[in-house]
Length: 422
Image (cartoon, rainbow, N blue to C red):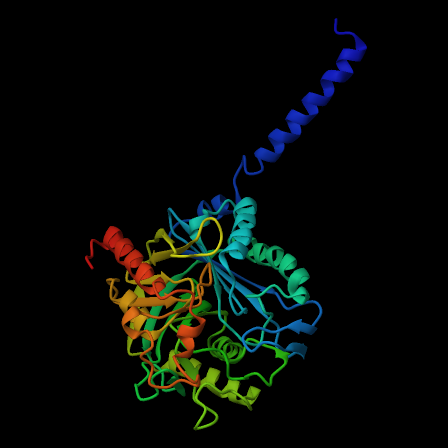
C-alpha cells in the first residue's frame, strides 16, 4: 500500500502527463482540415470574410506614400479566405487588404493557422492586394504594433470558418483583356495587356458561391492626399461582382509592379495627387464589368489540386537565413504562380510561359515581400522616370539578382511538375 504522502506526490506527474497528452492530442480525432477533407467527395470550397480594419481608425501609419496617418475609415479592410478541397488536398488562399508583409510576419500567421487547423503550411498562401490606403505593414511604426498582434487571430478565424462551411461546387474559369484605364508607368508607350482571369464557383443549384478575381494594377487611385482607410478600387470591383452575381468575391493582384491607373496629370505619370473615391469606383466597376461580361475564353473545369514550393536563397539577403519562397498551385487547366513581391509585367509573363495552361495566373505579394522584381535585361532601361537619374523600381528593388533567382526557381518547379524545360 502506497503511503498517503507518496500518493499525493505521484498525482502531480500524472496530471502533468494527462495535460501534455491532451495538448499534443488536440487533433487526435480530426483537425478542421481533416474534417473538411473528409466531409464529402469531389470539388468543394469554403469561404469566409473577416474584418481586419484597425480598431483605432485615426492616427494609423498608412503605407505606400509615407509619411502620413489615417483620419478615418472609408471601407472596412478584409481578410477573404477561400479553401479549395478535392479528394486528397486542402489549400487555403487568403487575400488581405494590406500593402504587403515580410516573410517573418507571414510565417508567424501561417504557424498559428497550422496549429489551429492542421493545414499543411505549404498549402497556405497569404496574399496582399497592395492597397496604399491601409496600415503601413512594411515598416515597424509604433502605431501598427497592436494592429499586427490582432491580425493573426482574425485571419486564423477566417480560415477555420471557411473550412467549416465548405460545399460542393462547379468551377467555371474565364479570361480576357479589360479596356479599363491603366498605363505601364515605366514604358508609357507600350500597350497594356490588362489580362484578367476569374474563377466562378457555383453551388449545386447553379448559384454563385464565390468568385476568384485576378488582375494587375496598383491600387493607388486614391493617391497620397487620401487619409481614409480603404481597399481602393478593389473595394468597388468586389462589390460590383457580388452585386451582379452574388456570393463572395476574392481579389488577387497580379504582375502590378509597373502598372498604374491612368495618370491624373499628363506630365506626372506616377503622381496620384487628386485621386478620388469616384475615380476608384469607376476603375473598379470597369474592370469588374469586363470580367463578368467580356470574357474571351471560358470553360467548366475539373480541379485536381497539386502544390509545389521552392525555397530561393537571396544574395546579400537580410537575417541569418536569407531566403524567400515561391510556389505553383496546379488546378488542372489552370496554374497559379505565387510570387513574393511586385513583379513587373515582363517578369510575370516569363513565369507564365513556364506553365502549361491554357489558363495561367500570377499572384504577386504572396507569403513575402521582396519589393520590385525587375528582370536583369530591363534593369535601368525605363523610358520614363521621375527620378533625376535611374528608374524608380530599381531604386526600391531589393537586389538586381532577385528576378533571375526567382525565374530559375520557377523554371525548376515547372520542370518537376509538368516536365517542361527552360
